[in-house]
Length: 393
Ligand code: PLP
Image 1 (cartoon, rainbow, N blue to C red):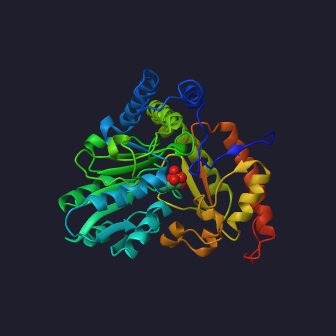
Image 2 (tube, protein in one colour):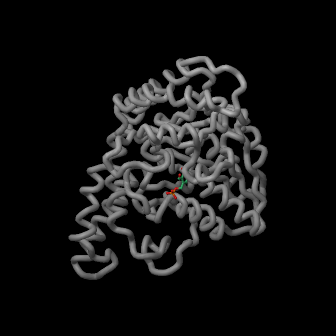
Image 3 (tube, rainbow, N blue to C red):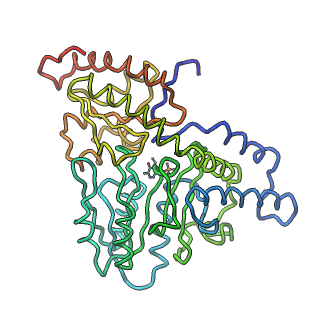
């Protein structure tokens, strides 16, 4: 593609890191054996597969035996929730989750509610922070599992995971965390954590699409979701997607090395862009807590314009952002996350998510800052939502 690409949509998906491509390529055309085969050729592949498991475990601060590879974040969420519930003894039929979850969890909960579970969805405040009192009150003797996302994909707002986990533990309730947006962006340590089950996805951390993983704390029982062979110690059947597994291992090793950079350079670039926009473009506001947030994410409301119009006009300039999660931006439904935060509709409709990565450069931020005011001004001038004379930028 010759067109200039300024990619600030990394919460939707990320570029595969060159190191990750190099690591996985030999497993497409050279080491193509089946890791379950008895011969040396399969055995060699199996050894590399276990190395990838070690790399993922290292990033999460857990034991390699606690990692199970899946096909994506959605499969990890589905399996962790449904598989652990199916393995539970007793008759607890209540689940606690939040109103701002990704559809991978939200729709799993909707499915379970049709299967006889009662589901409590905890709300958030104007800044996207969870109502912790409501969460405490929601957990009862009937509660089987609490599922809360680590960081929101639309706003980047981070949940008080360890505080929630402590409450869950005190009440003897399983704790699942959708950490698809958090892994690789903020340091995690399962050994020091109260999390029982955690989901992650390769394509959010510079590995390819089609690979995910679950952390399952030792001792937590799981019914496999995919039934078949003995792969993944009987916890997930199907011949392993070896090249993708090698890739997620390499991506996790890189993430472990780069996590400091994520928190300094990426955050500095994000803040420079965000502060400039909020200061220089009138009628803009930040969606989400300013501090308790992923270092790469900025969700900004531009009053009186349609987000889709902003996106398409930015896209003509080569700038790729998002008007919500990739899944919901396919529809014109206003974001369930921003609605839950009670952001005014005039702002929700014009909300844009910019999500940076370690590959975002200062020049790219300059380019966005250069192009954005003209785009906003032009759209506001023709906006049917605005009756007031917009000040020039
Ligand atoms: N959970 C969150 C928070 C996400 O942001 C996403 C993807 O956007 C998913 C789950 C689903 O992950 P995948 O696309 O790998 O199925």
